[in-house]
Length: 348
Image 1 (tube, rainbow, N blue to C red):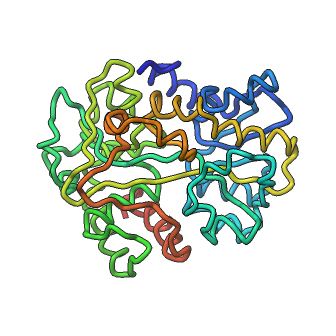
Image 2: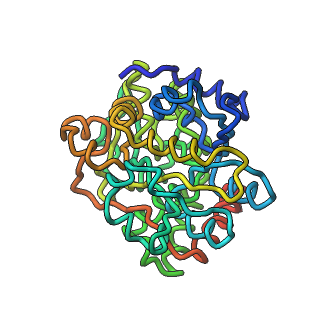
């Protein structure tokens, strides 16, 4: 698996640029890394250039920036944020007639009342992946990581990293405290998960903001293992590093999905926005995101053509341990998670 940029180069890119300028008629507010042209090759073929990208580090930051008046055409939140963004009036429906490949998206997404309202579709799922333990396989084996309680082990103080992402961090904490369906989480469950994160915090060398930052931490040997997206082992193996991915700790691992929303009063071209999404769901994009990034694509027809061995290799296959799906949850509870995580990171 060869990436167009090494992990180190990707880190440099993400930390030195706040925007990637190209086609001025389409501005996309996205996670760093998703400006990779392999995701939207058909768009480039049609228009001769990449869209313009500007980046956010996490979804609450993106939400607050949009609420303050920042304008873009498209944004890339994950499923848990969609209801909040809809209620805030930040997004408007897509014209599905202009996105013919929407037909390939799983029916469960098309029927979800958070993502749709009758014939109005507010969220196009695009990418998905898993979050589990990425580890330095030159120094550890999966047998050293059979439980998520390893994150609390004092022998690894200063040698672990966790995501600076409220959904992934609480997916870990809920699993570690016995909850594998957070849509049913109680206030007591939330408090137990938060207490677990406070116990882990003294061991954390750094909270990583994106895959490139984590790859840098692991490439230098500073971090032995981390709660990580499936991107990390896929990209680092492509760069020649021996990185394992433990998805079968006894408490389990997590899966997530993200997608694109049509922002209200976007300054650019609606036609180009719809063509961009259709391009994202193309067969070439499916092959690329799986083989180069270790993520899945929401085009179910093309994903069904990928053999199980490949999916296992990139961390998308079936596992026997519990799996916490990062589905939309109660907004009030998620707001508590956001506030509490900030306190935990600050040492409180």
